[in-house]
Length: 68
Image (cartoon, rainbow, N blue to C red):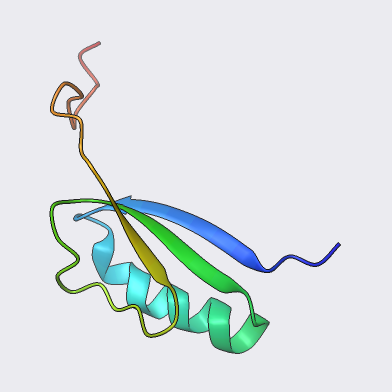
């Protein structure tokens, strides 16, 4: 079995890591990275080495769930 895709998910907080991760997985391992990005825009997210899919953020969910 050949692995040809790797899926990441992130919010705007971790977005700066996407461009580097996508480049590493594509150039070093020849695996197509895909990012499920929970934001309103792809600003700052490069698709040079992988695909970025915008996902709607559910306002019902809180960012800090430590008080649950």
